[in-house]
Image (cartoon, rainbow, N blue to C red; front, side):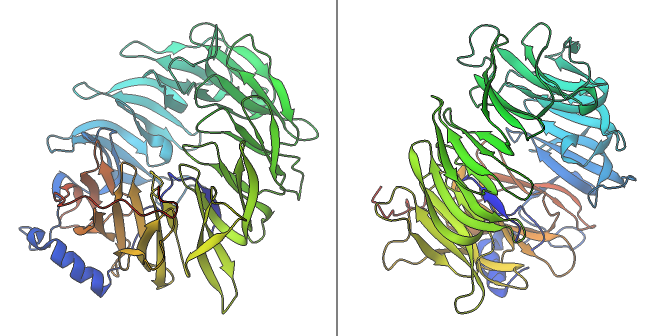
Length: 550
């Protein structure tokens, strides 16, 4: 199993091809008996209403759920070293409530950089795979699409609504309907990161609005760019860089003969960066707070040691020979795998933080996650006791006494904490090479004595959690007639059948409340994009019990 360190916001594997079990068929038939209608061609229809007809390769919903960006009429990309199925497509938008489709651009890549939403849509059209660049196009509801620039290799939306991009090796910024402005002093730019806040807090005078890294061939310099004015060189050659969440600090690594040196600076043009450590392989700011975690003293054949540095500059060693680490999304706590063996991609679970002494919970672990509040850690432990098994265990960082991890279930393939840290979801009792498993959940605080896990569904291959609502889960079942999947939603205790023969990876719950789901159907008789409204729920689920009474 591939190793990954996950934080509380990461759900289980993304929607992929999955198989109906008899029990699931019965449950879905009962849940959706009112939606079993037929199309004119006599093919079964699902819960959704078609809003766009055609063979669709990808679907991207706007944050508010009002619009759907669709890639269709695709041709296969003829370039080496591309992921299977990569294509160049027409980009269209259609209202999720139904209406006329609007063409935005042509030859848009299906690669992740092809399409991005903010309050408007951006895309790379006429994409050239050998150069990794295309024409940046912008579309706003109620307006015609406009071309921003050609030869764009990198772009991103900023916190203030600006659209920044690298074209022909220079950074430019476009705001509203104004022409793009080239930022002076950024020749040779390869990538950039915009300040996470429109006005970085605590940065003082002349705050750094953008960090830009030049290409290695141009020296690999890191440049600090103010909101207006010329870029200023910070250091070279730089390997990695990034802002703290508040935008008042940033960190970067400078390549040296004895390994990369980590430096930290306040986000002011006149600030001097302070050296923190050498031989740094990776670093990450805490999503909440001022803490900075990093792996240093890494050498060929040696993973390196994990440290955490608080906002006052105090440093604490957390673990030795750490392979991966991750922050909780709403707390200054970390989880990691130490004593990591890259040959088998496993290690010993560790957890701690600036204000929590490190502790370990189990060896031979390949996958670990920490809840968003930093209170609970779940992990998959490989064991040979009584035969080989992959067991899911749960530990509580605030529990008194020696570190302990309780067994949740044996034979688990995939798990995730709900974004609000109330629940732990997982897949168990798997068959067909883990293509069909039961999805269950328990309270993140652990099951009370005598209680049993809550069964969500039987037979799914994958599940996705709604980031807005921990009582809503998108489920996918493998089919026996192709790569498409059958789609359903568990919504506050009710299992709802949505549709069959759905394009893998296309299903997404729509904003603002997740009460609708959009997806693409690949059945030739009814191919297109569909939107389904979930049935009104009858009652809210009871809050989960907790081992500590909270």
